[in-house]
Image (cartoon, rainbow, N blue to C red; front, side, top):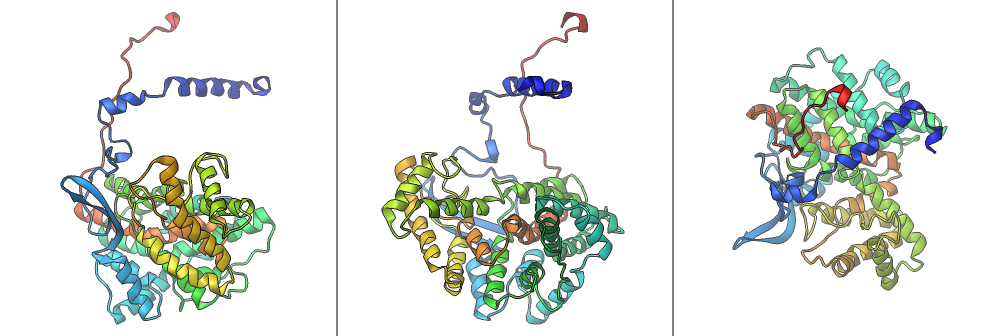
Amino acid sequence: MEEFLSMDERFLSKRSKKIQETGRIDPELYKRFEVKRGLRDLDGRGVLVGLTEIGEVHSYIVDEGELVPVPGRLIYRGVDIFDIVKGFARDDRFGFEETVYLLLFGELPKREELAEFEQLLSGYRRLSENFVSDMILKMPSRDIMNSMARSVLALYSTDVEPENTSVDNVLVQCLKLIACFPLIAVYSYNALEHYFQGKSLHIHAPKPELGAAENILHMLRADSQYTRLEAKLLDLALVLHAEHGGGNNSSFVTHVVTSSGSDTYSVVAAALGSLKGPRHGGANFKVVQMFEDMKRNVKDWEDEAQIEDYLGRLLDRQAFDQSGLIYGMGHAVYSVSDPRSLIFKEHVEVLAREKGMEAEFGLYDRVERLAPKVIAEKRRIYKGVSANVDFYSGFAYRMLNIPPELYTPIFAISRIVGWSAHRIEELVNQGKIIRPAYKSVAPRRPYVGMDQR
């Protein structure tokens, strides 16, 4: 095939191969110099690089120097996520806007404060007609996350004080981005659907009386119709994905770029780039794809032996994408349980009954129960493996008729809240620029003159 390459392509192909041959670092050197790869210790604990009051992820206790896994807990500003969800569910109301208030301001709002805050967000939830036309519709992208990052950077040009990093100004910038993320994501999908899939273009303006979850469904669906149960499940997904401590990849990126003194739009665009990565934000779609393959290959969804056999073939790289993974199982931090998954599963089951999809929910439930057993047998891992939040979220989005292209953008619509809180926290505490150490292991060599090379 090389004879069909252009001169430039042949030049770059050779250099690329050379880079891959000579650029690989001996894995033993990482052990020798005690490098914390992934900023994690050998026992899996994250290296402590900062302090935060925003979110806490609790998954183990230390007993006589040993790590003992415990049921996972997720805490927003000191309040357990289970209590937050129970609170707004008990009142039969939506919870995302209350969660935004809590994460940004550090306290739960009173009724009148929440109403005032919701009105504030509603006023910010708008994009100019020229912006939608020029930045979204005239520049459609096959990847919504890229479209969102481009739109965020373009919003820099519409801000009269984009470089002002005072907390007052950054708070307003963040609130406007939180309010507008649903519009940017949905309109970007509308453009993709029209220009790349040949479907009719519809653009619905957000309704001021609706919150984020209802507006997403209103803007996304051509007929703007949805049930309250559908909106409440999407609202719950936004609440559960809003924050996950300062150590997750995209929130850490937020701290890193903020520490350099950069503007809000550059910081959020960088965080979007992090979240786009399949190791961070794209796992829920992989779960859906895996289950589609499973449904084709497991004839009886109630036969646990057939399910175990398929899961074994997944781990043996003989099924689905041959990655050796059971997507949606396991987490970098949680082992006994992911609290988000426990909460989400209960509500997903209710919607599955309404949609007549109990049989498929039953398959998910069996896989969740059987996968840890198969993983323990195949991988000899006994520390505990549980379903993470991605396990059920893709199934939930599919029941909501949300296209796969929007799965990760919905994550971003939610996580922009945590990013905003972390950016402001970094600015308030004005720490040093974040700059970890890298040790060079390149061999020394002399400079060789041109004629002697």
